[in-house]
Length: 200
Length: 310
Image (cartoon, rainbow over all chains, first blue to last red; front, side):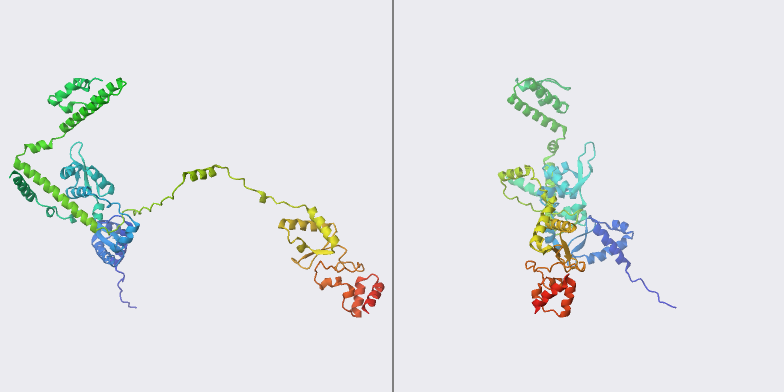
């Protein structure tokens, strides 16, 4: 008896998406495409297809859970609609009370890291010990080796948590340093004008 | 205490009074790095310990001097950045200053950007390991009175009251009490209803009363009768059982007396308790039956009954 061949109706990528979904629910840190591919035992290209499906399914306005590309990987977070409810249940110890000194120190580590405490102190003009300790405790920075030479100072770098807290896909998502502040030439000119004004 | 400056020192790099050491260091004839500062402190503390009194003035002077020495040594140990700048030409120094200011300016701008970013991301909630549960609001204690606390503690310190075990042991009334009671009742009345007699007593008393009942029955002092299981138990004198089916034929006691207090319903076997004077007129046949049943002297009883019925 002749029977027509039937295609398998289930979409294999859809099945892979369910696996990826499960992996992301279990993880408490963002998972990279490579990590997901390894865990799901599938090709990174297909993982990205699956992530595309999930990104559409779990997006703001459609779901209480939102899939985001953050800190070099993919992770679920609560939708912004639910922020008020989340705030009543959870506190945000990482971000709470970040001082100006801490933010400046964090900027220096983010742009110039890995860097040591003396380097931070040199740029800011004041000691950075307490700011560094606070950032370490919050998990926004971590130790990353030591300066060269005997008794080299400990160097610090930012952590994936830093990128996650600030919603950065990666460190490259920071604005370019050249776009920030005045250039050295502009400052020199201003210094000159001040000096001339004083001597006049 | 002699002046601190006269403190005699015996160090690896120097031997002599503290004063001389200071002079040599200030004249830069000695390298601060070579001087063991801890040894100087130890020497001073030892000298201090030799004396009973504490010379605060000397201590203060020593602290100031040793602190100055430590700073001198620390500066000597680290490269002097200012000296580097001093060596620069004014143009170069200005350039260096501008460069540093620009660098710091950039970092301040970056910090501002991060602060803005943080403010914008405040409504992004995500899981970081186990979710940090917000601390529960602290419950405020009601105003406390120390006296009340003491009183409460005193209560707790007292030994607990002895727990009564009275209910554990049942007190049984003597069986004889009920023996006497039932005998007395039966002296007054021909029979009585056991349930009605002991109904107002406790369960234990009822049980003992029942034992007494069995005793009396065993001794033949009473007769027991019960129409059906769980129906009222009737107690009577053994002689007052003319209606009993087990009564031997031909042995008929005197007709039972009416017993108003008994409250027994008329009818059934109790119909016999109705005195003959109140009996409904009986047919001759019935009378004959009765005569046969009850009277050992039928002729005598019959004549009497006939006379009454007439």
